[in-house]
Image 1: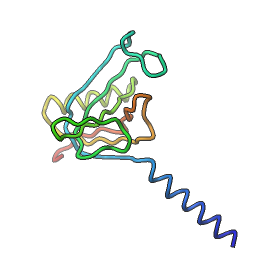
Image 2: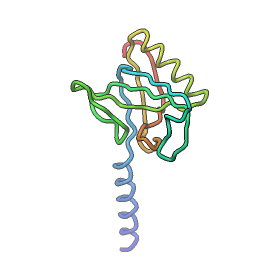
Image 3: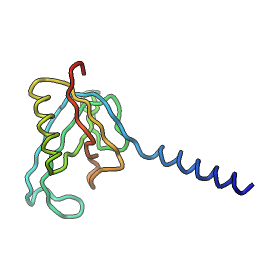
Image 4: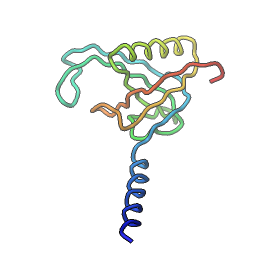
Length: 130
């Protein structure tokens, strides 16, 4: 009998964990690109300063616990791009899509976010037919 209790506990734990973490993937338009330089006017909650790039992408609903805002009944999700080579590649794709008015497919995991609530981008795609 204790074996079944252990199995039930493990399965219940796994199911409840997946309910808390959300990986979202959606197609949207780039609303805004924000690049901020490291300076005294840009501290994070820990009091440190950093360079940051944030994109705001349209979404029909919230993306887990990622930072969102709503303007005129449109929800926008704020996503952070890391300050590394991959983040620069993401930024290039985002800027190309924004300049051409194309939609992008983005993915974010709300277990990977900064202290301000911005989720980090998992990937950005531009492809025909989005």
